[in-house]
Length: 247
Image (tube, rainbow, N blue to C red; front, side, top):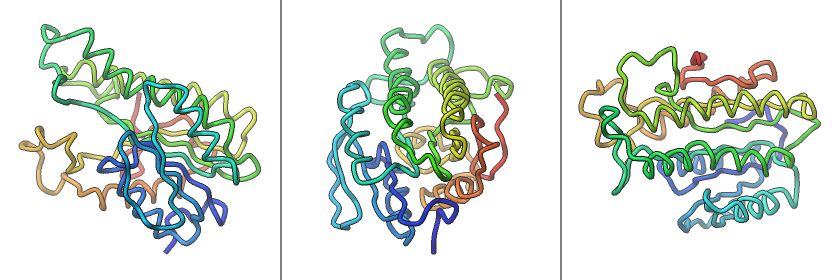
């Protein structure tokens, strides 16, 4: 059953961050889509796959050369119909989301902004010019509801909120420019909901069970959203249920 029936048949797709929980599920579901002919699965760590429609390679969001080379390699055979950026960081061994402004650490903040905002900006810089121009194409980056300034009622998580709010502004800005040469294109942010991955695991305790998605559920919802997108939607951020998230 096609996931992306609104895109061209024999679609050429790139997934950035294909080794992560959500990225790997995008890879699995798109691989099962008969309309997707080729998937370029880019990640920092090696992916072990055997399907002939999947081409793997390394990418580092802190290395613009690797991003440029990935973009060129993804578009040699055909223009790109869809690019999905699934990378993101909330915490790791050296980074924890701030509980208050007293916890702000400039080096950690720069790392979060580097992965969540600057990395996707560089992906857009090199991938957007190589996308299909004569039919619908989609550039989507995973955002988050906590990046909404108007929806922020709790505070905290300063770096993560900043990075996602900046990502949403990036999406709006590049969408305006991209539409001038690619009138059928859609550039959007996607909020996957709270998904049972390593990113959310330390913070799942207070999440109701019916609001914690598996990666399969989340990606299935997101692909339905992507399939329904039209050019008038470009520049917006959509939640997993298709609702627009206000800035």
